[in-house]
Image 1 (cartoon, rainbow, N blue to C red):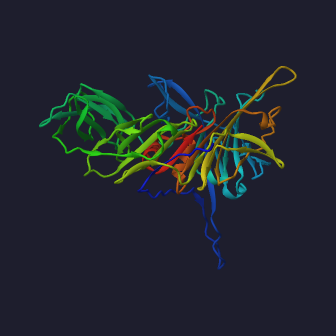
Image 2 (cartoon, rainbow, N blue to C red):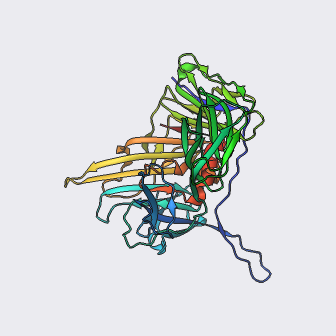
Image 3 (tube, rainbow, N blue to C red):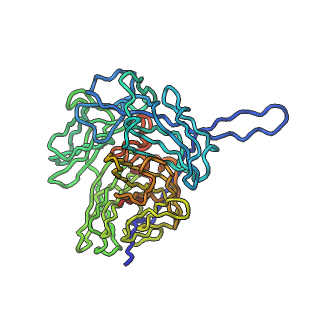
Length: 469
């Protein structure tokens, strides 16, 4: 039986984005000016974890999820990389590996890639290894990107030194009460999210132009808040007053039958950095919701609703907060209890989502794994991730990688799918979507510190629905 879910709100945000860079020149004489050719730069790097404080000052330090405490991550520029172009049918077109510069940059002209064609980055630990990790990006998602590869580039390889615009500050954010009673405080920024404790002064990290949100509680009830702009080297160094605010109640509804959800939480956010305000939950067997406490005179409220359906789809929906918030049945997205499959269609292999469709063009992450033992007893493995735009009813053509003993993806296992749906698929949303799995993939899009600020804003405040299975 078909079941479906979507999270929607009456108000919607208009999304906008920026395109890739271009290479332009003026025509000579009286003839028409040539149309500029759009070009994209891929910067290849190998991320390396080292003890904190041991990396050369000139090297850019990356903000990496899951980083080991006491460590920091820098990047070696990567030149030893295999990059190939494939057409819309998945056929090999050109090997661009020799065009990567000594600083790990590959410039790709948009016209060099056929519409719906792919750029594939092929990673293997050595020239003789049969373990492959591949990232394929469809033409529609091309932009200036930093791409991490796992292949060791060598200790003497120079480090990546650009894009240091976003710097982190670490210090104490401090508050004090005047006319209210409070006995616990929570501290939040895009880099720190500390649960409520008894201290009114806490060491946190934030971007240099970012305030820290401090929420005050009295016996677990939210009673006040302050945005702290100055961090100090010692506790209680620059006290910010809490004088009391009027907190109103915001109620919300779930029109979707409770038996189609196994979990749901709604997080209210404030501002461009998506400061967490409160997490509201519901009781799955009754559909009873928890109201928000919020300040109706504040602007820039948004929310993130996250949960799991009875069909095991994990979802996240972001939107601006308006007068009505209602989790209800779908209009654009349809989910069913069907797993993705790979089929041979005509002369191409096609990854078919099956369990999801949308009346909107969507971004899709298609992933599969092949593990084959050859006649000599050697194991051949391939992990392939494909990012593409997909219209309703379409499958994803798989590039013909022509890797020994790994040519037939119909034998693949561990097929997974992720989908991002939005009214407008901006460049910012594309980058955010491809970055979401960076921590788990050996070949992936990564973000420089300069781009992290915009990505955090996109992740928490843009309007979209993200699903995984």
